[in-house]
Length: 138
Image (cartoon, rainbow, N blue to C red; front, top):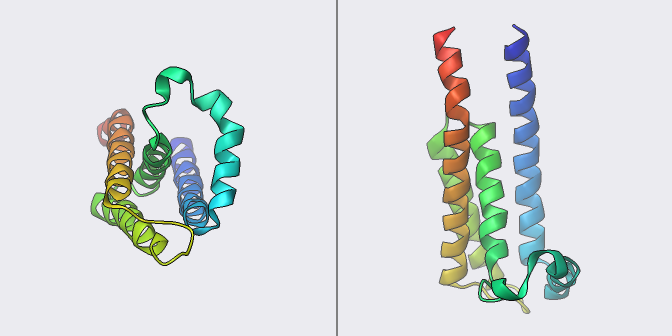
């Protein structure tokens, strides 16, 4: 009984975090480009070592991997819905970037985001297997 309550709380927290992450990613994607560069410059000493300079768009993959993992945990029994939300958000945000004057959406960026989202979804599915096996056993 206690385990079921805890699982329900984690699921609700993951739902809230997933939708907040969509909003944050949308804001960062569609806002003025100076906002994004300000964040990059503050985080670059921690994230961008000289050997990592060839991976210029790693933030696309990381952000959508986190998003995919959050949605995967939030909706574990709805994998098609999770894929539609994550992949749809990646495509929609890249298309929406073409409508802003200082941003540009590209197919490569959309594919990077989708690959990150797929990795996050797969990670969540694999991480949840031990718990779902315990639930089936009891």
